[in-house]
Image (cartoon, rainbow, N blue to C red; front, side, top):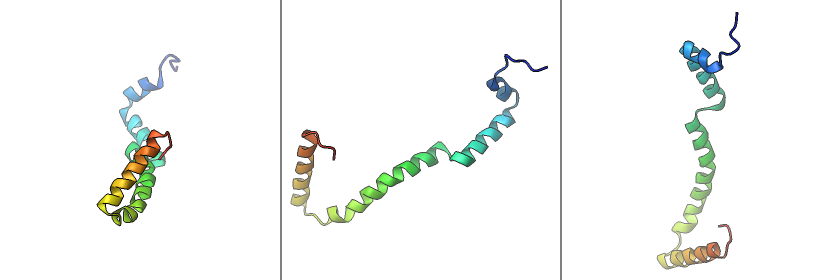
Length: 80
């Protein structure tokens, strides 16, 4: 007879290999938390890396001026 008050957590505590197998299946389908975070961040990294050549071409003075412009836009409430 099955105890209706037993929870899934109780089953996993009784059968830790089932918990491990379940976790491996979910990780195989969805990826690990780290893999999901890296995938999410890689889009931002690609955009940032695309800006690098244009910023490297700027002189120190031009870069300072660009920084001041971006700070002013941020203070004005614009999303940069």
